[in-house]
Length: 216
Image: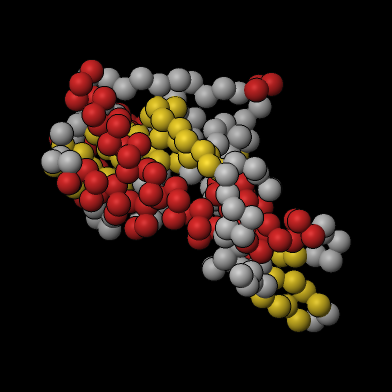
């Protein structure tokens, strides 16, 4: 199968590229020359988005024979949008979710192909969570490709919107990382674990700001 992978998140995209190549597929991974690849999308059987800054148009998503799938590191539809892992950790979620979805014209609104979850450790940081989800995504993509080869389609289910509500989270900014003295200890701890460079957790004391890190 001929597959193209879009990624600027090397920790997520590169393992998928390696797994597909080792499985014998023809893989183009073009994280830097995305616009050049977009011109030839109709030559591919499948496109995979694995942490890319470029947002594909509806027309581009549909060009490959079997469309485009996206590796989303958050529970859907509760964690649509940017930085879902960070927000889940900040919010003290008991389980961390990740999904492989069939992309459509919306932002993280596509049907779910595969999903998994795990319980984070009490000292896990955002770096640990990224490492764990990035280890699981290659297998999800391989299962989707195997299903396409065997059945000619991928089984999916629509996102279950409880109470008619889905939530979009923004990409993080420096302001999201601020710790204030009125925050409960658990909230402070979760924010310090979740907020790393380029927006590490910090606290303002008088005229000065101080960076906070978790020491284990």
